[in-house]
Length: 136
Length: 299
Image (cartoon, helix red, strand yellow):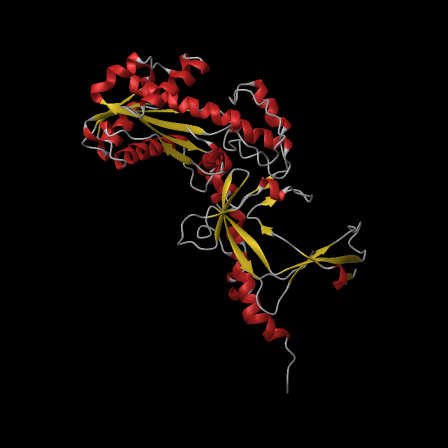
């Protein structure tokens, strides 16, 4: 099996309002995000850039995570799911993004800061080191 | 009573109060607290405090303040208007609308904040805020559904200089509590009637009384499920009536603290076979484990 990635830059759209949720939703369909999901800026000034929202009645705290300089966030779509593991797969590039909202259940301080940690460690410390050409 | 601010920001609570006549600042006052809409799965829970000089208690009973549940809606509206007019002379009120979103969020946070503590804290806040406005509060009467003794002791500790009386059915016994009960009920009825659905401004408004036992309410809930988000913010997600419907009609959702909430202690005991394992475990370097870095093997 091989994976083919289509990167047609002319078709690339800028993604608006990406939300990374702290829960798994057993579905993969269109969601009425703007009608049901209404993040609010917190009233406490001490917590700048912190948003509050709710999902299914549970309290969420959100933080904007910026994609580090020199990187770009990309969204791919697989238009046709493979029937077997041996089949070739094709991914089409659809959107790009430079930030997303990371949501935590209740509070960021009560949750594992998984995404932000991984994102920063990888891009700041490792990726460049292992991918840069070695000069003699 | 202007509820338009609340209706335009119905995810949050909203506290408002009447004008405070000088008479309430100059002499000892009594204050009654009651709530409306504790049971329903729809809409806010409204908490009201009503206060007047102790010397004017009789005027309140003369006005016909009685248990709000036995009064018709029209009679309640009428009494509220009388109360409101009197507020320029000798009566004041303060109301806190607890939004259904706030109730759900509190009850469904990681550390559950139950409805009783929430009610107590709201009542305490109403007393504090009234005192802050300059009202000379000397007697407090509160209607409660839970055990009155522990609640009364809790309040006595917080307000040692005030006579506190917590009783079941206080709204039928003390006119000042009846007046508070009227304020709360009138406010909740208006909110329910004028609720603005941000999710859909043509939402079907035939939602019945809002009580879980009401078949109209149940069928409205069933008809208005969004597969991803569940319900509009008018619904208290923390009520079992609501969560059971979502189990059947909406996509299932899994949270990081799902296992904790089950409180199953037996799963904490490791399987006996685990004691015979080689102890290989996670062979990846600590750096990758601690930074949550994984190799992507499947898409």
